[in-house]
Length: 506
Image (cartoon, rainbow, N blue to C red):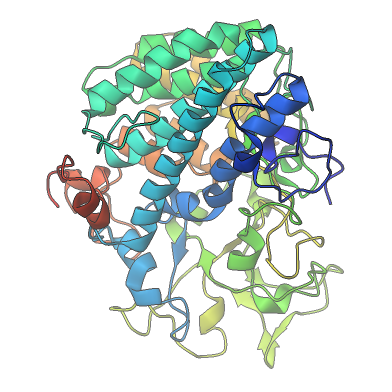
């Protein structure tokens, strides 16, 4: 179990010092009980982080990864068909009634609504530096929710607290401008630790706001039809030159069950298996026959894996990132004792062969259900909660390696220094013990981003920016239509709010 949990990432504590972790925070915040002390502000804001983390590690992750070539869930002898919800994400033929898409919309607006509620409470408390700090933090979190909603759905409402009126739909450009203005307004008032410490881990800092602005600007051409790569460079430099953030020497430590505050992770979704939901990588990825090898208190479900064409990019000699995948015949920790799947050795084949193309089913043969290379990047946690099957690994959302690679990309897109871009990419490669390169292209940067950021929830965003989201991979035909770069507004939301207009193509 983690040795600490950032207080702001918990559901919250009561103001009286109770250590119970399932307190309904909303019942504690009334007009007669506004937060005053730092601990009270932590309690008042805790639900914002809890709501963000709860769905990020499963449904939001699936929106960004299962729609890319990095991850896939096939049916396995009928299991995990689930009315075709994963198959439609893979093939890009989803409809407005897709349950995961609906869940992503509801996640975003539940978080935004909670931010608005908390801000309304904080604004009524007495003025103090602590109040200002927490207002800035929650405005940053609200901007992060809007970033994801705008990125996924395009034209979305900007909502207000305390009104019963159905919110009006804003254009994507208007939401972009709103996010930008919010981040520019609050960034200089956020804390700016030299590196992210235990006290600031999992909460917004100046470096997080800058990282979000870097992401916003690098994607501006897709969002608003205007390239803003130069602006993206500005915020990369603010992080690189203004902080002491640095790549950690041990890449794998960033994703381990005991990960936490470090010099590289700028912002993360924090998980404790006994108190919070969200990270279920081991549950959905590993085969049940691996339970003993990793000393797990439950049998994994054997659902998600990667595609051969993506796994084939992990081909650099000596690159430690290669070992984040399980491929081929499997052995116990001694490296010699075979792990059996029935009477034959468990064998993760990169090739995924279907017995039913319509349902994307790999069939019932002994090794059919073990097709597909598996990720152990978020390393299997022996302290996973046996009831919920959630694990303790935090999930980085912004980290310095991403900042380096985005800056290298922006340099190439603006005709900047190729030498500097190479230096940044090579910093990432050297940390992973891969050979340095002497030339770099945009396609090379995309491939490096895949190796470095695999399964961290950014692949859809990257593929759209590089014009490759409508490509052909796995069992996806390709050229599904550029309108698929944006998800449909859920059908239920169109019924509930007559001010909403469906995105083109749906």
